[in-house]
Image (cartoon, rainbow, N blue to C red):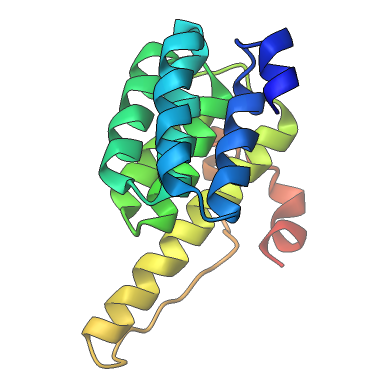
Length: 171
């Protein structure tokens, strides 16, 4: 890692992997030092997202959340930033924040690939499932949830969903 950093100190993945390695071998204090070094070396456009991931690895969840927030504010059109922030919020059971990030990928008109759109839809489904599971626990098992594939073709067209494919997609 040291050689890689000497050659390309502005590459986020090198810093992330160095911190991950240090944590895996129990050198958390050195990992903290390297996160501070990364904050100085990384370019502004990738710094906050990388620091968020590094702090999350270290278990500094509030600092991670702060950096994810900054990353989203600075990189509003970055699908990757929205996706990683949404996944972070989902892991922390902060479902409303995760939903906002997933919906941003789908609705704000980000330049998202079909794979990114599919991942955002799966993320929204996962968030809904986790919310329902939490509600079920809180209500002592009294949640009943039904889901239909849709019957009104004009409504399906309005949201860009292919009416003929609704059964297959629902499965």
